[in-house]
Length: 86
Image (cartoon, rainbow, N blue to C red; front, side, top):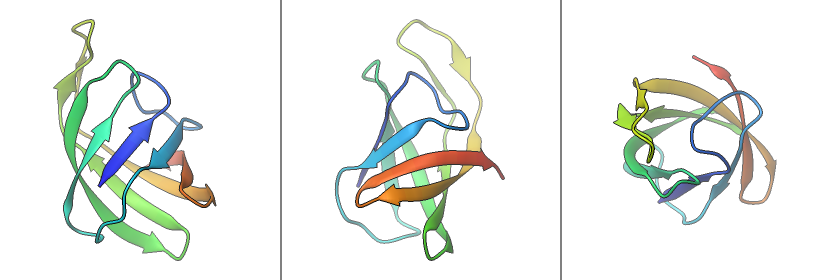
């Protein structure tokens, strides 16, 4: 499964497109707009909410990002939005 983020990093309000189906709890990948792909894990939080744990990584420009855990809420279909940190 691929979570495609609309920016180079995750933050509240950032749009996310889920590009393939997969099971909650399995390893997935977060892909950012700069092309960086990071191993991640999904967990179910509610009927239209998921928790995504994104591993530590560097942006394409070299900025270090620590592990982040976010709640995502479904907007429609495969489109989600980052709501807040866990």
